Image (tube, rainbow, N blue to C red; front, top):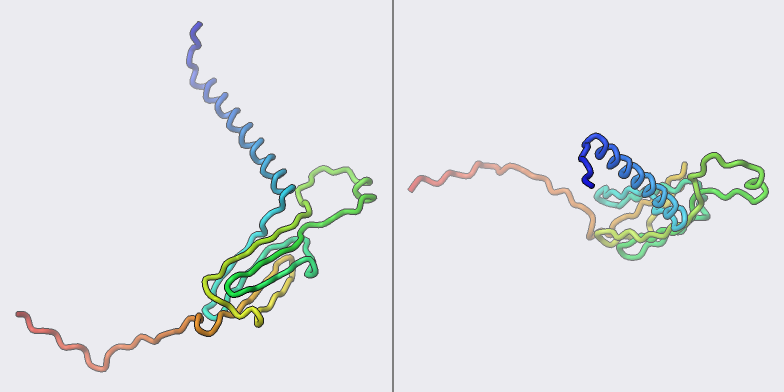
Length: 158
C-alpha cells in the first residue's frame, strides 16, 4: 500500500520529533553537568602590564577556592553551589531544583610568563578577581610615533 505525502502532516510530525529530541537533549545535558560539575564562566583580559581573570563561582566561599600560579599558567580549584542538611531537605517539597553543588578544576594558560608572587585574588559577590602582573620583559611598551623633521624629498621621475 502506498502512503500519500501530506506536507502539513509530515512537517508537523517532523517538528514534533525535533521538539522531543531537543527537550531530551537539554535534560540529559543538565543531568550530566550536575553529576560531573561545571566549568565556571570566566573572562581573561590583558591590561598591558598584567592579566586580569574574573571567574563566576556562585555560592562559593573564599576558603573553598584554591589558586596556583606557575610560570604562565593559572590553576583554579574549588566548590560552588550550596548544601542543604538532610533534615531540612526532608522537610521541603522541591518544585524546581537547578542549583546543584559541585566542584571544578581548570588550568588557564597565559601567553607569557607572569610574576605569581605578586598576584592578588579578591572574592566578592560570587566573582573571583585574580590580577597577575606580567614579567617585565613581557609587558607592553608604548612606542611614540612621530613625523620626520623634514618631509622626505621625492625622487625625480626617470
